[in-house]
Image (cartoon, one colour):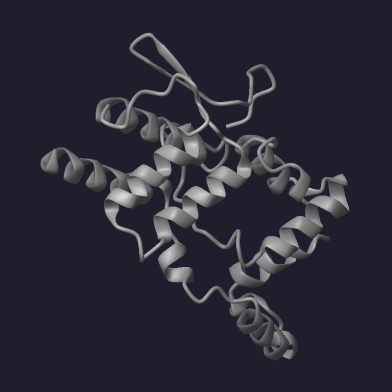
Length: 206
């Protein structure tokens, strides 16, 4: 979660070791893509995740340091999931995040929204704009931007639409639908479960 007092660049502190994380928004999106890739083995995914986040870190531990990377990915997932709103009554857990955005399919609309509202060219911010900064700006996009209008179409139930407009709304829902929306309606808790399963398998095979 973005704060106004801390460096937005993520670092992992583990047993006296501080390791830089590539936490740019495009790296996180590539991480989502990696976890969703059906053609990759568990081993490929775990190695790919480590390479994405730590491939450019000069003091990152060797790949066989499973304890560090298990801890690191948990911290990364926690940071990705962390959100200031929608928490449960005890204030400890974020609400379940239902995904109505596909960062690949919606890339054009997201790009246009950032350029329209902030005059930010996201293609020039790859590797620079941090995920928490990107997420804060994304949340702040106006309802006048295409991506926010697309999200509203996906979210709003047809029962909330006037009967005279329901046919057009259904057409819009079909046009902007995410074919795998049911599969994408997942929190980072599910992502962590995937990584925990991968880690357990690697340990058993080691």
